Structures are given as C-alpha cells and as structure tokens.
Image (cartoon, rainbow, N blue to C red; front, side, top):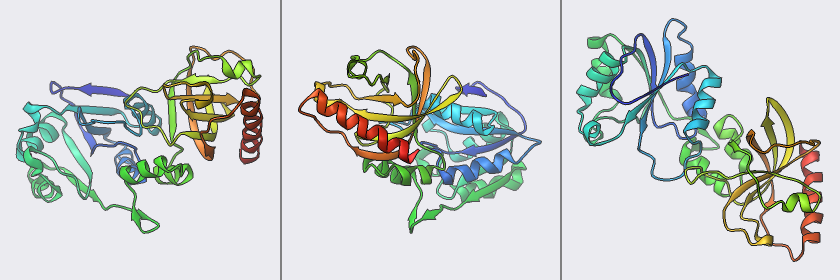
Length: 292
C-alpha cells in the first residue's frame, strides 16, 4: 500500500473515503467497501496526520496492516497544522480532493466536517459535486442494541472488559501487535513461558486482566492466554501484554506478533505467592482451551 504524507502529491482517478478512522469499525467498513467496489478506480483512504492527542484503538502501523489486508491501495495522511487548518472548505474541495486527488467518488459519514472552523459539511460536498464531476456517497450512522456504533463506544467497551461486544462493533477482533521482547522471565521460572509485547503510549489497551486470545506469528495462528497489566504480584510498573501460547514450544524473541483478544477471563489481581499465581495460570489456561 502506498503511503502519501504531506501536501506535495498528485494522484489520479481516486475513489476516496475521508475520516479520522480510529478503530475502522463496522460503520467505517461501509465507506471502505464502497470504494473497494470501484474496480476502475484507485481505492484511497484520506485521513488527518497529527490530530490524535491520546491513545488510539489502532496505531498507525496497525491501521496500515488492516487497510492493506482489506485491499486499500493508498493512504493519504493530510498534515493537520496551521497552514492546513486555515484552508477554507471550498479550497479543500478544489485543491485537495479535485486537483491533487482527482477524486471521482467521495465517501463520507453523515457528520463529516472539514475546512477552517469545520464549516464544510456533506451539503457543501454535494453542492460542488456537479461542478467538479465527482460522485458523493454519504453514509448514515449505524446502530446496534439501540446505540450508535462509534469509536467512543468501542473505547468504553474495552475499558469495561466487554471484549466480545467491542469485537462485534469493530467487525474484527481487537488486537495488539509488535515485536516480542525479553521480560522478567517469571513465566519461564514457573514453567509457563510467555511472549511479551510492550505497546507504546499511543496504543489504547483494554482493561487490565486476563483474556483468551489468538496469536499470529510467522504466518501461523495459536491459541493463547494473554495478561494485560502491570503484574502486581511481582511489583512491575510498566503495562505490557504478556501471552502464553498454548501447544507451542519455541523461541519468539525478536519476532513480530499479533495478539487477538477474544474473551475476557478475569481482572488482573495480586497473588500472595508464586505458587498461587501458577495455580491460577493453569486454571486460566484450562478455561481458554475450553473457549477456543
């Protein structure tokens, strides 16, 4: 997938979906599916670089992996800075969407806003469609259980440990990815070696606890038990994602790994002894095997 970052670009014949795209949930997938249907156009995602102030459901590399898997050809990261924030909605349409992107199809959500002061909206995009010769598709919000599917809602479900609900809203299992690093070797000490990921500060983690998971590494999928948190039994302070792979024996250090969270088993807790921790980990493993 081609990544375009900045203002100095010119592409042709684009089917464009515009938005923030934090989680690529089922509402976002409607926009993606529409541009991917256009076999005679280049499927392009347009999003904004520099707007995120806190942790994201998926960090940039995770988003790109997901987009590439879905078949998106290009991602345009539009710089969100003073120069661009002052651009009028009319200039954004003409100079960016039409002249730089050659947009033939534009897909947005019904509440999409753009341009200086957020004055641009779907009505303005529709007004200019005939002048510039693009087709506009506007998608309404979709609901489940009487509530709109949104990144805010998914964040809340993750914070409450409702991983199955979050996954249903996302349309795919929530995941954490990264390079396996050395931990404190506690798991190996008690006979249950683990693979450790240390997500950056930009990654939104689910509530601390233990999950039944699927793990992807070297193109293979394994069942797993994943702990998210700070391991209070041993007094750790940095949050990490620590996974025991079931029915696996090998060295994972330095490998890229992706952990898909499927079921919440229990909250993170402190144990009085390593023997008590080991017994609980064995029980967690048994429950995960039953679920997976």
